[in-house]
Image (cartoon, rainbow, N blue to C red):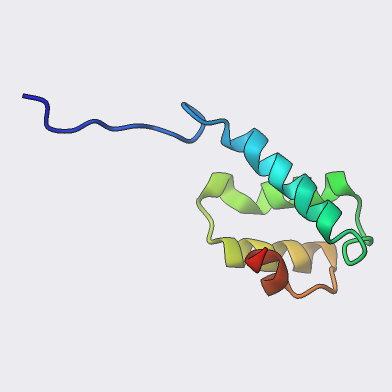
Length: 81
């Protein structure tokens, strides 16, 4: 008798890296005027670096990204987005 079915979504059934990169690109474009101290690639690479492959708390991750890049935007704004 079948009791459970498990799915491994991240990086197996879903390409999390590509989805996350698209999100970062879209977010950069939405907030470009406030993120102009870095370019889009630096923003993505820093998000990717601090994201810990999706395991890090996102509010903490955005705080670290803002601090690392010297962004003046409140990290909570990016987190809420």
